Length: 84
Image (cartoon, rainbow, N blue to C red; front, side, top):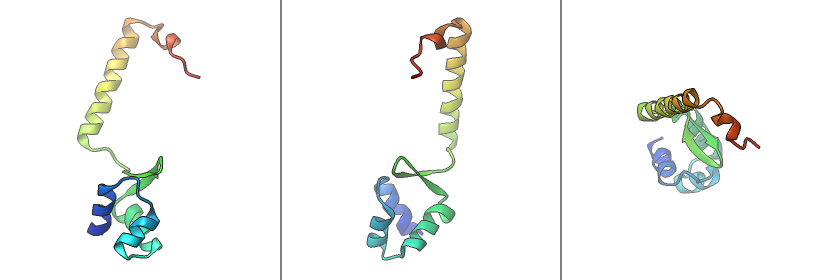
């Protein structure tokens, strides 16, 4: 498990097949380690942790508070964003 973790952390864009080649593990074993043991999922062709750490959560809250202040000061700000 530690080997797979080290391989993924060295290159987040690595594929399961590449991990398989580097580790000598089967495709199924690599997939199980990533999904179950390391609790990772595939997002935009790279493996990322499913849960945010405390720093990331705090950052997300701060950004949301900033946006709330902006919208409270100018209710039309969202109308000026190109959502398309």
